[in-house]
Image (tube, rainbow over all chains, first blue to last red):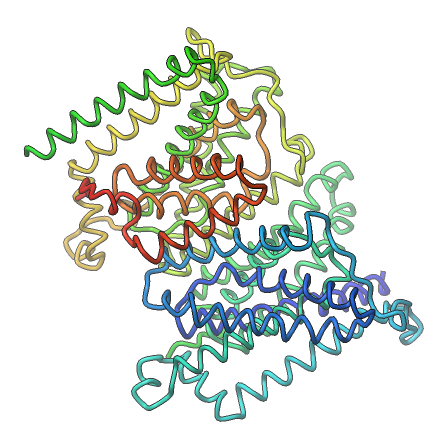
Length: 304
Length: 314
């Protein structure tokens, strides 16, 4: 039991950190420009496909990662400069329509290029086995993901919290007009944020590629999770995104692993069999509804 | 008043043409298109119900698939239990969706703006996950219908009859919407869209007015869901997933938010474009997406605005 809990906690940490890579970009886009971007999940899907293709072509996982990041950063740049810029001043409904259209386009574009079959992306051979950790074994590749996730989170923390550009970002999230009036070039800043967000999506896509399937529609389910994260954390707050991601990752993973067992010990197996999975899969949505009910601005409100 | 009379006569002409359509299609042997036309009517009803919430009530709800899906699943589950009568199943679908909407709305309406969008989305996703984890509801595979609902004295097994019933329900809803816009309640909703705080100060029970609007839209959506289960032959999880909510919202925005015919125009246009493109290319959604982008950039008022329909709902 202790081993199961430890293993699932690490899994939850790993999932939460990957969610953070997605949520970090999304929360800044949402918080600063008040823009609903449903196509954020498509950037993640695009990253996974680019990474899988580059890794297959080159035979190197590392080249896959670099290729995905550079490729999606370029896509993000083009997207922001040509289309998204026009949407900032529009109402939420127009943004929903436009970015939903982008999902449709992205899904079919991926099908056109790579076909309808899922792509295989193998983890690097050196990391494919388990690793002994204090007397229990855990997949080395998942440890790598945790390491990269922690590294990127630390980097972002430094970037947002301790650099001049980060100060502009925080100022923009707290009050965009005021930041603009004080001479921050919010437009250029935002292009930068969007490109950074796209690169982080791509990184998450490639890293999760070997664990989940690289397939069309992979962005849709994770997008909603990222939204849940940023709403829980408080829209526009990086710290909120980190706390929210870890919370959602843990609650979801531990809930799925432990709830059925827990229910089985308190109710009949039949009820547990029905109720366990249902309850586990809605835990995070319950969490979000509860947070919104008691703290409508999220846990770490960014708006001043 | 001249414009409104011209509008009414245009409506009668359109209704007549719609009634005539299935018989004309049958006469030229293109029965296949009756199914497509029925689907258009059903989604027109669903989109109209969402437009009532978004356009009339001013609430951007992103979880409408929940109520559409509830309608479909109630019909399918009752059919599984041997209850095929539409006179029992459809009202029950309506009641279930209304109760769900009252519960969801009561919590969600405490939030506003972006947070309302997100919390309605969260509730819809909860319902999606609950349904796919219930084994008796068919899980991921959905629940097939053994037959169509029995709507004595009409025989829904005939595609033409299903078409006519869908048309009747859609026409009745549109008529009700017209009456409602002119009623006291409609004017109160219009006031809410303009300035909620002032309405509150005037003594209107703001949250209750919005809750009623939300629940009424949900009830109508469940009816569309019940029809769709019949047309589709099954209730499937896809009807509950958030992309379905997105599609319905796309129809509303495409057609025209707050325009009485917005939902109808959007549903007919979107399904029509999809059908045409699906014949030309395997990747129809790619071009649908581009068309939608063009609408956002060049026709911000939606198709209704493009055609100069002034049936604004004040």
